[in-house]
Image (cartoon, rainbow, N blue to C red; front, side):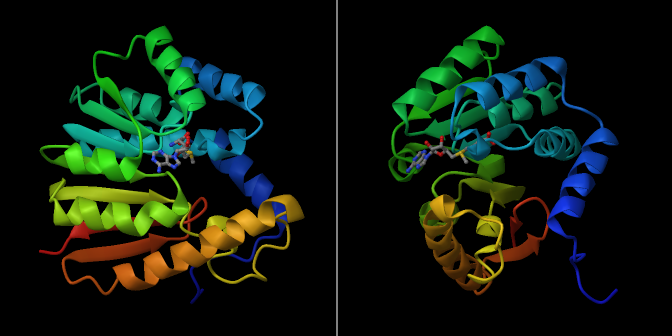
Length: 235
Ligand code: SAM
């Protein structure tokens, strides 16, 4: 196989997701409960990462052993809880940035309910502003907020050296449901969501295309989930 992506049909892709989820180390019951609670309480719950992504976050955190984690885009707190679960060994500090008052309220309540406030800190406001105030370095940075902000976020992270030597930035959804690759690449995205994701796709295509030209970093785009861009300092 010379290509990097299998040509799954939509129903087969669903089966592949289920297959992987059922045969991967599952997220904890508490995390699964919070995922289910979010799914049933918010109409835009598709903003939340999947259960398999939660397993990936926990696995990645256990593997990389970060001492500090930064997350841009908290939503209901699901991913911050996954980073928490994956860093029980290192007792990492986890900082999550969020703008929406509704999601700030929901995630704060979740952090209290699950007793994770000892290590999870939520910073309210625009991520661009918060990034300018952060001090020190982070070993794992998860970029998962407004897609037209990715280029600015990563530039600030690199310019301000918020990424540690040996650290990694993971940018989620860089395929914008497939529309980053081309407007004809995601016929299954409904009309209601299409205009939004087309805009995201345009911004993310510019982000991906410019980022690889930055001589400071190595970049790897992985065709997993909705596309994940990995970034590390170049040696
Ligand atoms: N990381 C979460 C997870 O895995 O479940 C999902 C995050 S959701 C895709 C994106 C979040 O970013 C939303 O809650 C949104 O309110 C927040 N957001 C959007 N624009 C933002 C901004 N400029 N600054 C901070 N947060 C922002």
